[in-house]
Image 1 (cartoon, rainbow, N blue to C red):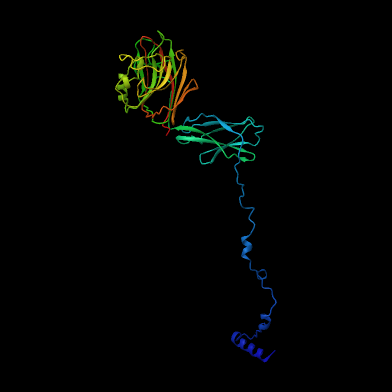
Image 2 (image 1 turned 90 degrees about the vertical axis):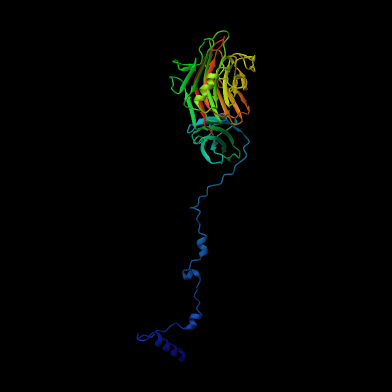
Length: 396
């Protein structure tokens, strides 16, 4: 050891080891400076941060495959419901879709979606190519709703879908007249029959009657009106006819005033507009006319559009203002017939005994209002019976 080293040790001991009775000899600085010791991060215990960033996490990440829509070279169509079918809020909706006749429907399914493409339900497609939906997802709120149906094949979902519009309504009136209801008021020759219907006239000559609802009124816009009618067994060829009218007046008092003024005969107990009277407001009438009227200016104030018995939609309480009509040569057979009138966006659809007989756009703005039945006879007569009234309204 050199003299310089001894002096350095002595100096370090005086400053760092005083009073300890020990002499500490540090490693020679030459050895430390020239050490071959590997000081890489692995040897010193330091972890490379790059390693932690690239840790394999494939076992914990959801890697659900993304579906790719495909072009499908087959078609599918709704069998039910019909377009703009009516439902009350919360009603069960049943839908049926039929696929083309393919050889194999194995692993085919149907997705029932909303407008935004959200899947509301799924169902299988059976061996005949038919898919069924039953549920309340499309009837939870009032308004016009749309069912969307998309086929999913074993290779993926089709890139197109079909749709069907529904009318979901806040109000639903159902009256079968099984018992005499206090909600309905009879006027003139009309009466409730204990057999469970309302009769406007009976078969006497010169009769005129009406029945109106004093509790409920009909909202404007989309609506569906349905009832059963029965007429016949009269005399002199049968006449005159009967009608269901929704007239836009604010109170039942005003309604009663117009009923009292309505013309019998060709006016069928509702004619107060046009040449028949002074009413100038809005009204919609479904009439069943069994007598051909020809204008004469004294007791006949319009000419019918056909010489046959017919069912028509007229407006503004004017029996001469026909919007649409169709001939019904069998209507006076004194058998029950079901009539349905749907007022939907852009058109009116009429069904007679389950068959669609009118689907037209008469440019009608339905305003709603008070409702009443009416009917009349003259020299010729018939029974004029109404039953099983059902109305969907307040749908928008």
